[in-house]
Amino acid sequence: MKTMILFGSPRKKGNTISLLRPFLDELEKAGSGIEFFDVYESDIAACRACFGCQKDKDRVYCVINDDMQPVLKAMEAADLIVIAAPIHSFGLPGPVKTAFDRTIYPFLKYYGDDPFGPSHFEGKALAIVTTCGYPVEKATPMLEESMKLISKHCKLNYAGMLAERQRSYKDVFMTEEKEARAREFARKLLSEM
Image (tube, rainbow, N blue to C red; front, side, top):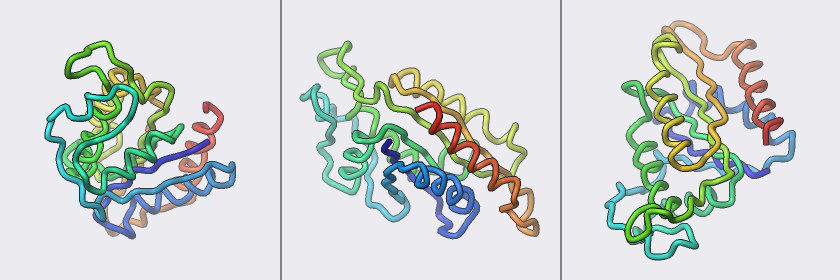
């Protein structure tokens, strides 16, 4: 199995990477190949909706020549796509949203001249690993619902979400319970692939 991580946290030693480590450890133990992309360290422009990518239905590509090219290639090769990012304003942080927006047109050949073109996402799974400050049940519904809608539209298999909270910076974020849930989420995804 191949896993592609689209990581988007401005804090390199923050909660999201702390939660992601045991998750990745379980995937690696199971032999999953992992490609990791940090969008905060990348030069990724916003989608121009130019439909240049729609000219060839058989391949995944974008006419904008920036750091999104290796992301698209890794995503195309992946069986599992994981978006790992904190929740900002009840959704994805701007750089993550920008990068993910750049995947829609290159992977979906529904636009331009052929509204019945293929989805190159079909058969792939999408999962979310996220952290937040609000209670999980209040912070995550908009993000999760949007990912479910995107998955349905893209013919991705929505595989679920792992979300953990830190109420205050005075509290220790990573606990044994959170680590156990991260590992269990990875094992769940592996069992479903």
